[in-house]
Image: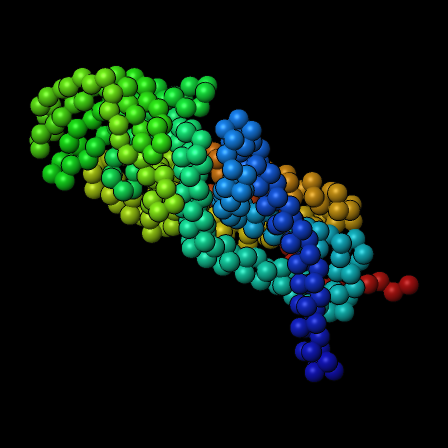
Length: 385
């Protein structure tokens, strides 16, 4: 009897995994398709108006899709547990298992282990795969820029050229998508913060160069004092947009999926060494903490999905899908709110990153306790007829 019971445990695990994997793959693929579709829509301007090569745009879309991995895995895990466990509740399979002497903890062990594996996979993927994919997508984007002569710099953000160290700022981009206005370029010097700055009223792309128009050049000495100013009608600067160029933009406003934790940590240390603070430093510190917090959302999703599945499982898959979307939306709102607080030093960065996980996870534990009326792991007995 004991041997038969021990041999039944792996069968239970296999059965539960068989219930979890199909909805996980379905929701994971659906999330990826939705993400890719949104990028495709954003790329229509290059295809239709800029006449960019189709396969080059397609390559850009494919390389950008992995950026959704940190959101896709938690959502798919949450969805899978709600669907799988909800179906078992609806078909009274959980009651039958508990009547056979299998505790609720034993039943929940497999979904929790599934969530832990999802956390490990997300950590590895976001650390090694996503940053490289993003770098390749950036190079592809600048190939598109080269062929369409469109502006490659996002307005109202500081962007750094990894090859030269120059920092670019563009106030706005005209409607034609090819003319930049209020352009500032800060050129670094080995002996000081800047060797000179260039301020231009407008700038355009000409082949593989940026042409600045109506330029005011200001030079500085080693102590940072202004030494001279020159006005020029135009000046041309090289732009690395070929396939062999290094990643062009390392923006301080990038999300954490575009960099590894090592890269973010290095940037944070450099900013602290230079005495920089404020929103820029706070953003990078929150993103560094998010590199670990985001993947753990998969396990948090399991903790909140289990009691919700037990309570609403008999109401069908439509309700389970609605709950998954609602929980994910609440988690996203909490993440956005605490990220804003962390950027402004209202809360420590580590709190800003982990607070959404803590709130949702604690909610799941409380719901679990209420559902079982604090008798979490006692098997329910089936009354005799």
